[in-house]
Length: 162
Image: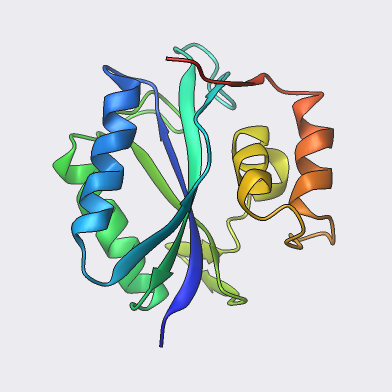
């Protein structure tokens, strides 16, 4: 049975826009995922480790026919294929793929937490998510739209123009 999932995509190394498009292509090649909607690209400032270039971020909704752990494995394999190296926490990356929401599921394992634990702290996630699902309730009881509005006052997020 297919489940609606939201995946965050970001890049701040090399051809950022090309990296996001390549990740979307690779996700679309997996027969267990069917893309539904893609939010616009946003240019965002780094969070956490700030001594790095700006990011391009978006959120994509999919219908997924795979379990949360299988989806995580797929995302990590795509990151690996695209050359992601995990050296600095929240550091520069060719591609970053995060499961934000997986239906109504709550998952709390050492390697996977759903809803994503920092979804309510990051404008680069909340703003594009609000483009796709403004009324979706997030942890803490706020809608994506109200959270996006609040966070975008504190963090740099602007619509990307190529």
